[in-house]
Length: 359
Image (cartoon, rainbow, N blue to C red):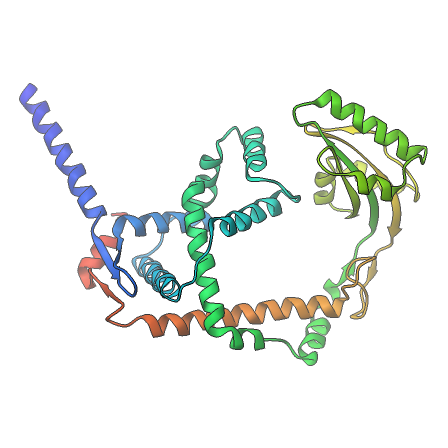
């Protein structure tokens, strides 16, 4: 019996060893500036990342080959950028990373603050949350982001003229408006002056601060401008525009029915001091705007300077420049994909067999 168990253990060890050896097989080598190997394991990790990001159960062998080619192109451009003396600092990476986190929250946050939000809402660590969302932990995602930023920098340097020239004509803008006129609608909106006092680690102190601000705004001892100028670490405030949507109700931390009731209030109405899980807050209704169809010369949002025409121009320009960027990436990578810069280590049936790992 012991011999059978020993034989089974050895067989299992050899099986794991064979799998590990297969996982480390080189699929391609990029050697433009230095020698870098893309292994089967690296491809598997990238495929799993794309599956999580796009909620796809599996990729075909041909799609995996496309991902492999994309990884080769990425390394070629990164090495070309490094050879040209370009560099992305960790500070720049962190700035972009924190910016993306802040966009998810809807306000400026630090990495530590976002991590705490994740822990409070999901009970998960930041690393586990990132693995679930994008298939990488924080460190790996930052390394990936660093390469992406370096690729963008190099492509823009090489093809800046072609990319910057991509812009819609006046006729393009007006045609887009005419075709999508029905979608340019301003819903009922309200302008609120909001004050938010985070509890942080001193809920009682936050309550006292919030009550003092509430009382001073209510009895007009403090002007809106004064409250704004004194805001900072202890509290945040400012004017916000909201519409009759469930999303805005959620952002305000109130029920949708309460939001509808808010729109029945007159200008000057002041809410009660409301307590949420994370803060104390109140608002004052400063202005109300009725729903209407927007003409091409109308403002997209009240009290701003962006017209519908400007908005369409910005969006069409962004789309056209994105298309120009994609074309630029293709041009640059095609020029870099020479036999002296890279080579496949696995081809044809052998490569197909390696990439068909689901079977």
